[in-house]
Length: 61
Image (tube, rainbow, N blue to C red; front, side, top):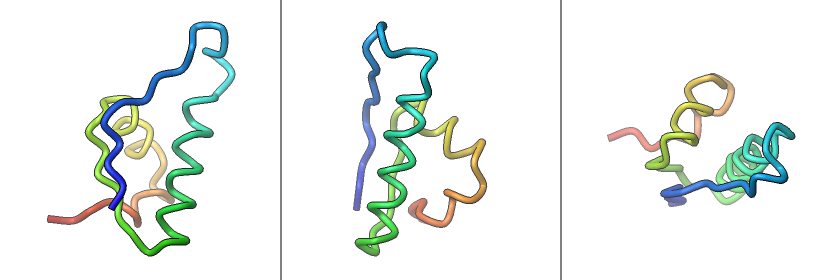
């Protein structure tokens, strides 16, 4: 299981989709390893909600 509790991008890198790329990598890692993601971070939750193709890795309770 991957718990994303905080995603922070330095101010100098904002508006470059660095946060989205980090989440995309987490989704790819979860798929590769056969684990689920629990997005506690508001940014991660919002991004996963905006990408239906990523929602297969969400932990279903």
